[in-house]
Length: 199
Image (tube, rainbow, N blue to C red; front, side, top):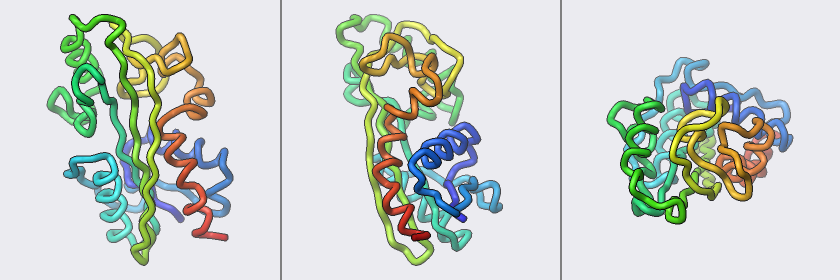
């Protein structure tokens, strides 16, 4: 069994699809932290990699099983890379997607279309029960819209048009998004370390 250090069902579903496509899971069952009775891990790091490792360590220690974690967010060039690691709580409360989107779009209302470059960034971490650690990263560059579009995805997906598409990440199919996403890139890079758990 491999535990994903999250209580986010969207993220668990997305990660399961990404890792299934690589064959990295093999006989391992991927479950969420809630499935093994572990509290949602805390994020106190200042980088995506620090947060991913903190979460994976907490869960691996709590349940004695290998743990996967990621930390990801939206980085906006015009805001010096913000909201970055604070993406999920940009408007104050953790995980209020509508409030986060509204605040960010308001902060960017006077930014020209040419200056609306942004990217999703992800750090993915694996921590084994005996403390071996691996971290990989991935990015999905694009540009920001002026209003949310699309019903798919979650978080900031409705306002980022990933390169080279003309639609937002929320308008892509799950397969299209996973093929180019920051999370897909990071976890595909980590797939060899995951596969080594059972080979």
